[in-house]
Structure formats: structure tokens, C-alpha cells
Image (cartoon, rainbow, N blue to C red; front, side):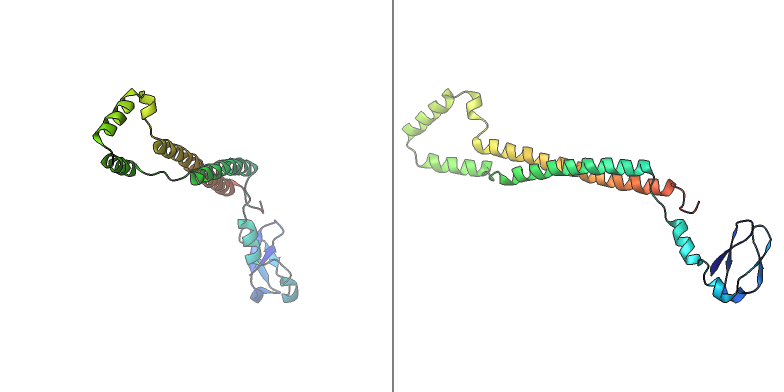
Length: 179
């Protein structure tokens, strides 16, 4: 199928079978002469025009929103990567169960006099010196960097999704290329 223009500017779809004949414009009723087959094949085809008319372009606002959200996604992604490297680089501390097991092993090897001396030393320490234990401090730091890794990562992914939605909405609301 080929597209032929009537004198009023309307498009008429014609086939090669109607080459050399007259057709009526379905919109205005004017009779239009269809060119001979050689000239008809030089006209645009329906498939070419329908693709061009359905091609949508995003509006400036949608592209601007997408660009800003993409920039925010890149920055938050970099923050997430930094947090992930810090989280990964910290040593994995032993657990509270390990600490209790090691304490029980230490107690088993000590004499009653040594245990009383250890208890007196422990009681003389202030509350801030007793808690948290070093392995708990490392775990708290690891938890902090884990949050620094995953919260910006989620924010970055949300920005990318919102940017793509902005482009899609901008594309749907923009006029087609041939109007």
C-alpha cells in the first residue's frame, strides 16, 4: 500500500492494483488520479509512514527530569559503592556466642583466687569501659557501613526507575512526529 495525497492534503491509501485509475478521497470525496505503477512505487509506503507517525519523542521536561534523576542516581550509586567497600574491608568479628565460649574456657583454666581478682578488676571499671566489647564496636561499625551501602543503593535504583517513568510519560504525552 502506498500513500497518495489528495488536493485537500488528505492521505489516501492505494494499492498497486489501482495504478493508473481514479480513486475518491475518503475524507473529502474529491476524485484523485493514481499514478502509473512506476511513479506509484516512488510514493511513500504505508509501513514507512505509520512507523514515522508512531515515533514519539520525549519532551524537554521529561528529558530534564530524567537527567536530574540520573545524576542523583550516579551520586548515590557512588556513595553506595564507597559504603560497600568500607563494609567489606572491615574484619568480620567473632560473635557473642564465641565471646561467651572463650570466657568459659578462660574461667576453666583459672584458680579461684585469680577469678576473684578478675571480678574485682571488672567491678572497678566504669560502665563505659565494660561495654560494648571491641568485637561489638566492630560489628556496629560494619552495620553502619552496610546501611551506607544499601540505603543509597535503593535510592539510586528508585531514581533510575522514576527517571524511566518520566521519559515514558513524557513520550506518551508528546505529539507524534508528523503533526
